[in-house]
Image (cartoon, rainbow, N blue to C red):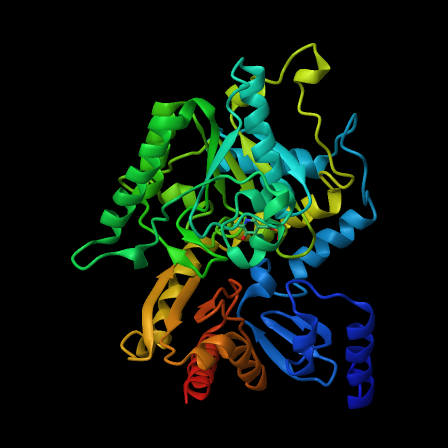
Length: 452
Ligand SMILES: *Cc1c(COP(=O)(O)O)cnc(C)c1O
C-alpha cells in the first residue's frame, strides 16, 4: 500500500483544493503539514509514505481499541451482510435493542430509555429539547432557559453552541444564539492559595445555587461535562461538584444533563464519569446522559441520550404533539450500534476498566519527570487523560505553541494536538508497554524542542 512521495503530495494538494477541513484555518496549511493517511493499525496511523504516527489523542477522542480492531471489524462484517440500515420510526432491530438494554443496565436501570442520533452535538440538542419539552408537557412551559459552565463545550451546531463557552468557537455566531446562563467552572486550577479542589467545587456550586435561587422558575436544565471539561483544555474538577449540582437541581426542580460525550466509555476510569461522583465513589445519576465519540469504538457516527422513566412518561400520551418528534435519517443505524456492541463486548471480555488502571499507572510513571519540570504547570491526570500547561513567556511563543508542538510531534511519529498551551494525552486503551514508553519519550522530547 506504500505510495511514492509524488502521489502522496498530490493527494495533499487535491485535498487542499477540494476538502474544506474542520476546525482549521485553511491558510495555515501553507506551513502546517496535512497528512494523507493510508491506513491504521492498532494505536498507529500510517501515512502514504509509510511514516507511522502514534495516535495519542485517539483520533479526536473517539478511538478506544485501536484502528482496524479485529473484533470490531468482524462484528461489522457480519452486520453488513444482515442489515446496513433501516429507519427507526415504525421499525426496530436487534443491535439497537441490545445496545439500549446493555447501556441501561450499566446505569442500574436508572437511565433506561435511549434516544439515538449520529453526532455528539445532536445528542446535546436532543437533551436540551427533551428537557424543555418535558417542562412544557408538565405545565411549566415558562422553564425555557439553560445553564452551562464557564469554559463549557457541548458542540458546534446552533443549539449546542448556545451552551458552549469557548469564545473562539462561539463569538462569530453570537447573534444567532439564544445564550445560556454561564456560571463559574469548578476547574481545580482556579484554586486560590490554601484552597483545595473541593473548595473550588464548593465555590462554583454556590454560584450555581445563587442563580437557581433567583431564576429556577425559568430554568429547564443545567448542562455539565462531568469531571473533565475537555475542549476548553482538560480542566479537571473535584467529583464533589457533581453531587452538589445534583442536590441543587433536585432542590430547585431543574434537570441535570451530563454531557459524557468525551468523558464517557471508560475515559475517566469508570464507564460513565458520573459513576464516581458520589461521596463514597458511588454513582450520581443525572436526568440525561449524552454519549457519543468512543461509544462506537471510533468506527461510525453514533450518539445517544439516556434518560429516566419519569421523563419518558411525560411524553407518553395519545396526543402526538406530546411525543418527542425529533429524528435524524440515520437514527439508530444498525452498523453503528453493532460497532458499539462489539465495543461493549471488549470492555467486558478484557476487563478494560481494570487493565486501564495498570496502563494509566505505567504512563504516569513514564511522564513523571514533567510533574516537577519548571516549564510545566498544573500537571493533571484522571483515568486515561493526562494534561499539563506549558509555561510560555512571550506572546509569540504562546501564539504558535499549539501548531509548533503538533508539527514537531509529527516529526517524531507522534500525533498530539495541544489546546492553546495545554498539552494533553488521550490515548486508545490498547497501548503496550513499549508504546507507553515511546509515547512518554516522544512527548517529552517534543516539549523540549518547542520550549527551546
Ligand atoms: C466532541 C464533543 C461534543 C460534540 O460532539 P460532535 O460529535 O463533535 O458533534 C459535545 N460535547 C463534548 C463534551 C464533546 O467533547
